[in-house]
Length: 195
Image (cartoon, rainbow, N blue to C red; front, side):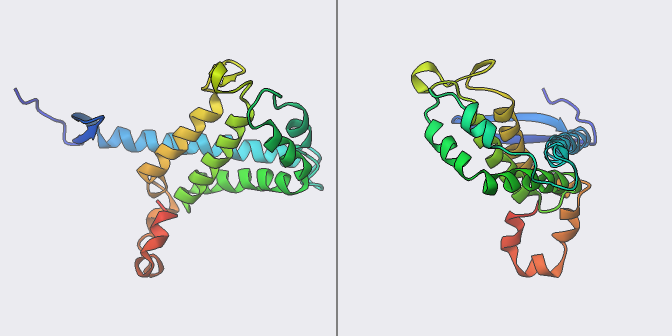
């Protein structure tokens, strides 16, 4: 028996784990939820970057340092412990990447500009934060502070990947305008950075 759909409802049919799945969704609510999630993630990055920048006063944007965390907070049982100690030796290079990376990622997510690139860079940063939070290795289930395997960095990483897949920068963002430009039309590879 067919059900009557509302005008803004659509149906997605796809293959998931070898099975065909279908579900109805509202285009309007999907658009609002995608923009809302984009703005929340923009705030997460922008706030984190600006707090680090302001930590030592606006006159010295690099007063905050990752060295204390990298050298002291990563558990010795973490299988990547040595990698994070090595990063600690290069905090002078890591710190501006974190601070300015978070600010720029936050702004790109906020304005929907070069969204896919920004979301992927944010996901990479979240992957580093997630692996740094491991308290031990695979045999212990990669425990993190409040459970096993999953923490907020992991959730943010997946959320950013999903937003990039949806092309969230096109919804009330600058990427929707940029994709109509002659430069992008002449260079279709730029669409991998936009969206």
